[in-house]
Amino acid sequence: MIQDQATTYSSIYMHFPFCESKCHYCDFYSIGREKTAEGDASTFEKAIIQEIRLRGESGAFAPILDTIFLGGGTPSITPPDSMARIFAELFKYTSLKANDETEWTMEANPSSIELSQFKKYRALGINRVSMGVQSLKNEHLAILGRVHDESHALQALNTVFDAGFTNVSTDLLCGVPGQTLDDLRAHMEKLMSFPITHLSIYLLTLAPHHKMFKDLPNEEEQLKHLLLIDEFMRTHGFRHYEISNFARNNLRAKHNLVYWQNGSYLSFGPSAHSFSASARTRFKNFSSLHQYARTLIDEQKLPVEWEESLTSDQRELEKWMLAIRLDEGFPSTWLATDAQKKKAEMLQKEGLLEIHPSSVGMLRATPRGFALSDAIVKTIT
Image: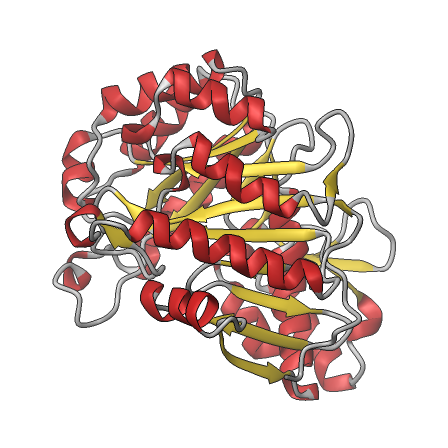
């Protein structure tokens, strides 16, 4: 094992693999209801509790957690009593900050949101919901294979707020086949009628062999989508703090910032990735519920499929990739060679980089640069 046994983690991710239906564009490990066997849910619960126990007994948790993130899959189809048992094990080894200071996020889909369930999640301690709206046009939802429609999405948002959540994020997709700028504007206007604190908008990406790949808008149209979103959200008081993310009242996604700022995080569940910043190592669990559970329950071992120590070249590349993602940018002292300085000047002339307006000695990507971040990283490294 090359993991740093001295690392203690204050940010926790848990992967709940079950969902109502596997979306055809989703690359995350998940199991649709049609492929879920009887007993899978109880097996998962038993296995993840065992994984928490093994990590806890080795001293992996910091005394107090900064963030918890429940992703998937669709965590919100897990019954609250099952979730309570899982977290009872976690809290044997660590605790939460007072007054909701620990950001505890749960992903949810509109079709899985029910008032009494969400009141129980809130009572458990979950204080932030990230809801996968994806679109507010039924035609596009059908193309994407989503199991909800527009009315379900809007009603689900009402339900989340009625359940007592005030820190609510929603996801949208842009670059969907047939989607227009007017469609995107209408989606965002409808979401602005709710007191959401955060919006994530992702460009739909598909593998070349995917049946819909040929129908995706071209790069010029995709850029128009991204720039419209930036302008609209800034106009409505949101900070474009990361390539795909906008926050109001500085309620940025603290857990995701741990990833983007190269911090340590410990993950649980099948396919989950972890990272130790002090040891500069990354490790991943098995991407199979049954192999994950068998390793934990039958073999009484951690279900790590692989682990790696990052090379200096990997660390340098990731440093740039992560910095370009954020509006905080990077210090000009990172431009260590004359060639890098000339490339940065060229990127400024092309409108992809700019001098940071409020941080001395810093450069950052422009809105156009956010959309073309891969090109910036490729040019400057």
